Length: 310
Image (cartoon, rainbow, N blue to C red; front, top):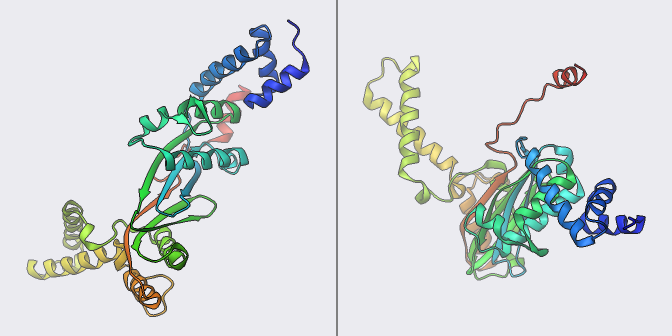
């Protein structure tokens, strides 16, 4: 069967694949459009596998909040380069992943990837991701997602630096979302800037306290200034430092960065609640930062060019 330009154009619009690939797919399947789509999928997956070994440490974080502000999702999707992370097609894909997560019932990444894709139930999330890898030409990875619920209140989101950091903050309140949005957005900005580990002191696990205490003890004993101090004095010093540090890692105890009077985040929220004549109780937060914990590959471009010449 003769392969026409119109057929190639149609297949390209359906799949997003390059013109040369579309022409080859139609040739391999004797002009069968459905067969050509399947051929591209299969070969796209093969291309994606080849790219899977590359380190994807760039990318963006995206969020999606339901219309009633009682449920929300946050996702991190990685790419190899910041150039792709700024690509409109990649950003649209990440926004769809966030929408997928908001509607997802998955409890882990394997289950999430196995779900039907939100925009095409004929393929899984994993299959669509692989097609995207083949189309864009870089390894990509849906690294993590989290779904947050607050049936008794409001969830507010904040995205910093175009997706480098994403935050969700939830609070129990009888107020309408529009009444508390500014307050909770300010709290979300605090989370983005100060990266707390816990919501309140009650949320700090004993293992964390123990490890931090041992670290402070070791530092104190290794400090020459403390060489002649008795153990009971060092113990009091360390306890004081630990209490100060624990305040710094708890959101409600942190000094509110926008405050002029050194009030804590908890005090700021309480003051807003009093002003509005309502109740606002922070119940949780999630903070994703793009690429955190991923060891980035160090590129030696001179060596790469020399190798290609050789």
